[in-house]
Image (tube, rainbow, N blue to C red; front, side, top):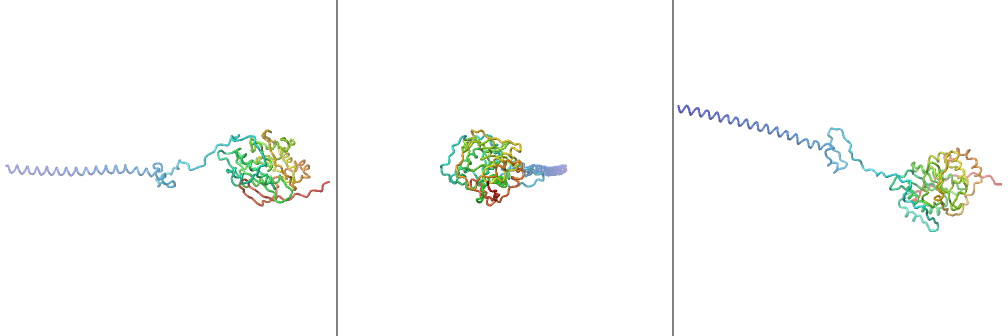
Length: 369
């Protein structure tokens, strides 16, 4: 009986031990299965971080270290960067009344005036006589046209006084000296036509043209070298004429027209060889087109003239009075559309652009008397 009971207990113990072993094995299998599931879950979660870092909007470390680097494609449409590239600063418009003007100026022509000195005084003027204000944006681009021959002494004084004046007036401008080649009779108005065309060839942005004799210097920098709604006469009070107009229709010395105004009058006449007459013809052209001449206040429109001996090849035009009376007939056929010339040399100097031209010869005058 005891043996039977002992064998039964032994079998029961073996069965219990077997069940415990089986339970242990099942527990181990279930444990590793759950661990594997958790491991896969966290692996997927941690993998999302690097995937987002590939998107251009998620990471900027690559772009910061290498400005021209591009991120690998993520399969999404590329979004342009919101950061703008390097651009020039936007300058404010130049004021209508520049704050740095001096007013009345002391003008004298006794001190020596070498070009080297004038160049040192105007470091901001670029080659060819070009200048742009560094602190504002002008409303106009101005070409200053000077008819010229054998006046180097006057040109140095003109450059000495006018460059500082034009800079203080906050102008974007270029200075063009139109030099008549040879020793034939001088033709001022034709040279001005040439200057208009040649300046536009260099810079089509010119929209204001100031036509100035080389021997006239303004005595007040408030006389602004700009173009307006009407053609403008600047030199209205010269010391030569006792600081007053010689006559009501006088339009000589220094004048300004916009590009549109100049084309409207067909430019200047080409057939006034010698001095006198062309200014009156221009005055007539302006009047015939219905425009009116504007002038500065006489207190700021004063000019000093550099004295000189008249060029022996610049004698009065004997037909000037007849031509002036016929402006209405000649205006359409004689002007900017009919000017003929040949450019011989273009030289860009530190303070101006010199353009030497052959404008031909005057017609043979009929004998006087």
